[in-house]
Amino acid sequence: MLEHPWTLFAADGGTVADTRSVRRQERGKQRMAQILDAALELFGELGYRAVSTNAIAARAGISPGSLYQFFPNKEAIAEALSVRLVESFRAAHASAFERSDLADIGLDELVDAVIDPLVAFNVAHPGAKALFADTDMPAGLAEGTRPLQEALLGRVDSVIAIRAPQLSAADRARSGLVAVQIVRAMTGAIVAASGQDRVALVAETKRALRGYLAELESD
Image 1: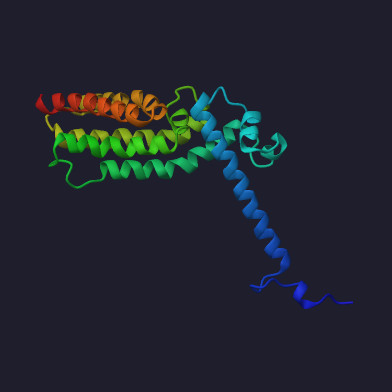
Image 2: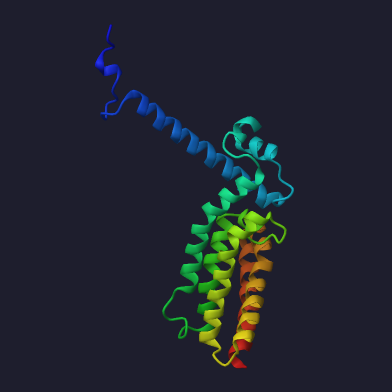
C-alpha cells in the first residue's frame, strides 16, 4: 500500500528526508559552535597548552565522544577557531589601518584608531590571544595565523612610513615590531581587567604607544 503523498514531502516542496537532513546539519553546526565557544573560553582562562579536550567537552556540556564526532583532537579545534576568528581580526585591522587620513590626523586620534578596534576584538574574543600570540603553538596552527601577523606588521609599517618618512626600511620594520609588541604585551592584562581598571590600562597602553610614535616622528 502506498504511503499518503503528504508523508513523503515537506511543506516547502522538499522530501521529509531532506528536511531531516537539514535539521541534522543545523544541529551539527550548533554543536560545533558550542565546542568552539567553550574552547575559546578555556583558552582565554588557562592558555592553549593547559586545556584538554575533556575540559572542552565538559564546558560545552557534551561527552568527549560527542566532541570527537566533530574534531579529532585539540589542534583541530584550535585550527577551526583560528579560521573563525581571522575574519573578525581582519575587520578589526581594517578599521584601524584602512583610513585615508592617517597622514593628517593628530597622534592621539591615530593611536585611538589603531588600539580601540584591536582592544574591542580581544575583549570580545578573550581566547584569541592564546591562539595568535603564543610562540609555542603547533606548527600547523602557527602557519595558519602567520599571514595575519605579517599583514598586521605590514600595515603598521605603512603607517610609520607615512608618519615618519625619514626612517629607512630596516628602521621602520624594527619600529613596527616594537609598536606591535607594546600593544601585544598589554593585551592579556587589558582583557583580564574590567571596568575602570581596563579603562586605565588601555589609557596607559595608548600613552606608551603615543610616546614611542612621537619620538619616531620627531627623529
